[in-house]
Image: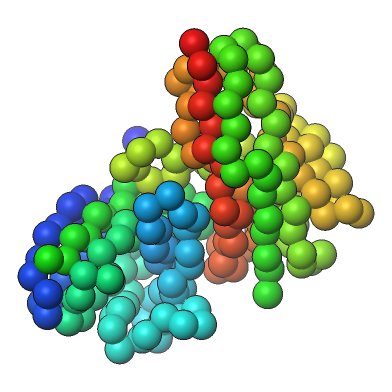
Length: 115
Length: 113
């Protein structure tokens, strides 16, 4: 069964609006979750590390005010794309690492299209 | 920080032949090396991983080898089948639950029936 659940799977929005993507860890509590972005035919690029109860750690070049991350509980992290523009259209994928083995499990991803 | 390179970017093999994908990493402290398969429109799925205390690991038709000295690791798929067609990503990391995982650029594998 799924370890990580992500919602919505697809979202289309108008330029200038904000979109929230939810990521839930189903099998275990996750103090840390990771958000990746993937453009067509490209690799997974780490955007930020989401930390439960504290601020997220953003990778170089990722705007923290544009990509708001909230990790309010041990099973839920959210990514909000604020004032979305067409160049933000991408596949956003969250992931969780298992505590003992360190295995990285991914959600099914969220396809964002900004018109 | 860690940097992962992967070759080839595309690979086409006949059904039944073997496929090999090679990766290198830059951070000698990395000790966890997973491989993922991604089908179109889906999230990546872990297919096999190897840790730095092991040189080789096999799971049915899939095997991974690791050369820590050279900082190389490779994925071997034997007896390829059309359903093996996908994009494969190698990655490198430390093995704790809070360390980030860095991915290679990916290899698009096509298995021709």
